Length: 118
Length: 112
Image 1 (cartoon, rainbow over the protein chains, first blue to last red):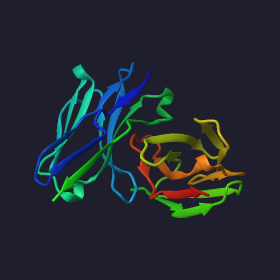
Image 2: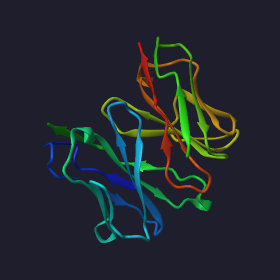
Image 3: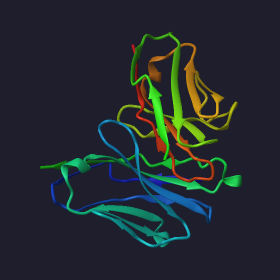
């Protein structure tokens, strides 16, 4: 069965600290996709990144970086030099390759609330 | 790129009243469309998804229903709201042959 676990319910850091948000997933498929979304206080979910199961390269985008390790079924997200604007709830999600790829339903973790204090 | 519109932004309705939330998508054709609900302080629950006009799949049996009368229009309805229907409703779109879902701004529903 598909499952996404974000064990950290809430994290609080001081501005400029680095912070890592953990995500562990379970799937029986060999082809799957992993995502991170950000939900600021306004409520809209903002897509951050997608990773395919066959591509284990880590990715960096500015202060954001993602570490994908199939051996530990983890897809962790690190924010370097955090800022107050990073305060949000962050969701990790999994999508398996459905029949014909026609569904693409996402399985979300429960989210990690990040508070960055000045 | 896709733009997802939702309205209304906020809604306060009494128990037993009907509900209609609308979602429209711009910038893509034949998208997969989704309705999610997020209760206060909780994760996202998939309610319905649609792969085409008139095609609706329900993930959670309840007093809500969904319809897709046009390619880029997705409607969430209820004939009689319950207190437990309160929450934040998000519409999402995934373009044909795409992978990630893009979300609208959401509707905050309070049932009193």
